[in-house]
Image (cartoon, rainbow, N blue to C red; front, side, top):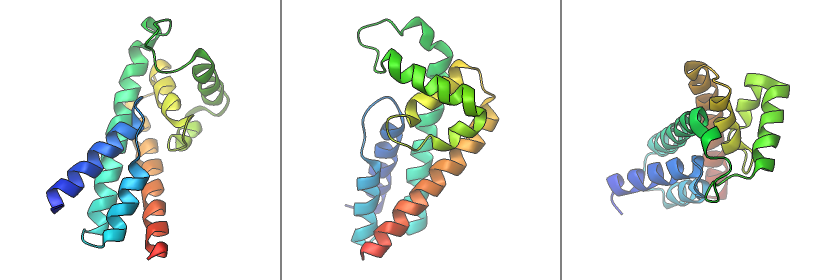
Length: 145
């Protein structure tokens, strides 16, 4: 796999992982780290960029989500959204630092959109969280070497 393919695959994997679709960005990032063929900086950059952009898509989905909650194809249960909403209402913007956590992270980014949380502050908090997550995953991958 050439560099362009590797970074593109990682970007797509990370983007999908942070949307309402299931993904596996940590596995992809770890695998590419372990191959030792690619820039560690660029791996973290493209993983973070994809994940951040996916979270922004979720924020925009949150703006219009209430129209679709009762549809059979809707990917989150009312229970998941209620739990994310209670976290968000209890901890406010600080709950967004948990956007990287499986199961609750994606709904939190959607709930932020539902509550019309300011997009620029959302992007800053989510970016910090996502970048730190991938730095940590990269660090663990390096320890495996």
